[in-house]
Image (cartoon, rainbow, N blue to C red; front, side, top):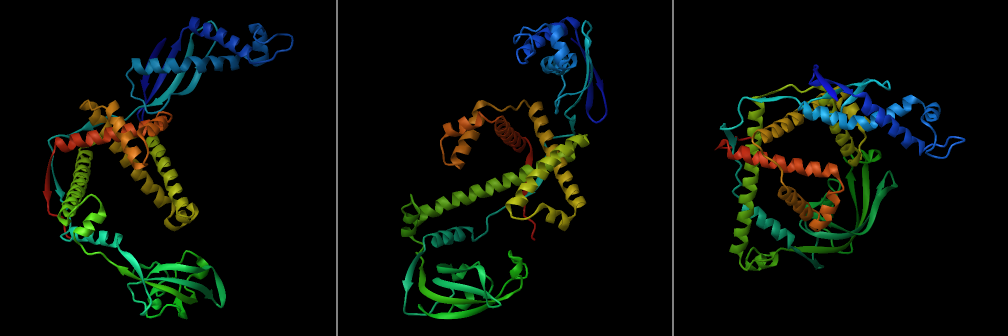
Length: 435
């Protein structure tokens, strides 16, 4: 097989492949035998029809297409390997000349990975705004634990307060007509943290158990049910029960309730470790992002438009899925923001993602950073923890899914390259700018 490579614009090359006549003839005869087993030709048993009869019934061109389907994958692979081509798309056949007894000539185009050139990616010095936990971070964590272990105690000798939880029946009406889905029996509502219509919870304060009364509210102008936008409404209420929140004190007893701790000091030490780790993760993220931006600004790469368009279509599909999950309509998003604006933003995001990916893979190549079986095993263990199942179950699912394996490999590679960059560049933390 002979191959010549012709460079084209936009990181494309043309492959001119010539397969010798003898190889093509042998494969043609094999194809005839294969096809003879699949077709019924009157007067002949399956697989016994002569080549001439088969060509007459199927057509020589169809047989040639079958031959090329067998020959071209290995021919392309050989051409790509011999010419050290870093491709990002499968070769697309533009034309072929297939005459039995003569060499088969195939012309195909393929896109190459853009060439990346760095001005510098090591020994950089960058300034990063340092994240620090708020002075009251410890207290907020303790307060959350207090809320988590707060119990409810029924009270009957007083009126409801804004800090209570109530059990109630309610029926809603607009213009005297019942609201669809606007009624419930023995519904529990935390008056301190209500997500009901503004003014609803406030009007439940100051009432006693067993009391029946009516409240007036107005639906927001932008309500999820358009028929109720801005409408005044009345709700008939029956207060069935008032529950008082009993909050635990922040002491050793609370620490024991949380789990493995015997004292409050032990609990606080664990919270401190959590807060310190959270700060480290955030500062590593900020450092990595600043390094990425700095390296990208010193990197030259010519990304072809076709590559951007393919990545943009991936983003469009993701965007549409999120819109559908939110209950909105894609057409409404287009009408609101404008197709041109959305397209421009998605193309910019696509280009940024491509550049980041190219940067990562090029640094990995230059520094011989590779993903090992141990790296993939760690990612599988992370997935098992996330989905609360065994590694074996995740492994069995992963090995069936080539795309998932590639995704996990890319995640592992990105993490290793990021670690390399953090270790081989200098980060100076500065005070976070006041907002």
